[in-house]
Length: 180
Image (cartoon, rainbow, N blue to C red; front, side, top):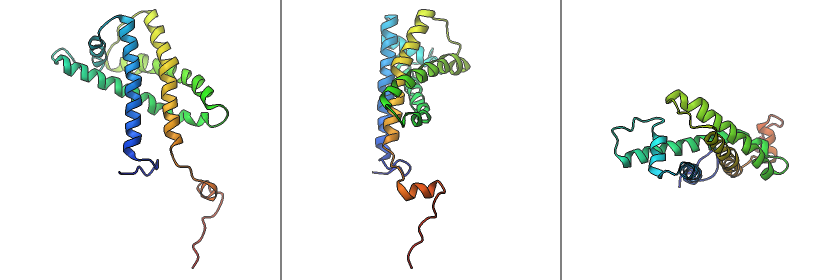
């Protein structure tokens, strides 16, 4: 199996875990929308696909696949965006910090996705304050902490340079000279 040099873990394992977690997060998000609106999943996927694709001439299966791919891409973007925040979890109680920082990150990502990014591609309809609050809560209480935890787990799998090697990397020591 090919190794990813930057992480020391098999590339397929890392990518597979990212995709699996993003798919699970997307499924949670879609289920919440389907339950809230009392609509079949097909209609929810059609709405998601419309963000980036003209679905009028597409077959229903193609629309559903496009919606699922768009949802997966959004959740992958959310997880990847959480990686810079992992450094804030290094000290203290990481799980408590994941909950608090994850809620802030999820709320911020919701605002970014629905009020900055998506309107650039497709005008979104006004669905009312109740839906805005429900969707915001979904992102802040579920998706944000999940994304941050996934980034934390993946980041913790990376090998760390230890001792003298770390000091060399930081410029504090001269690298050892080989014996002749």
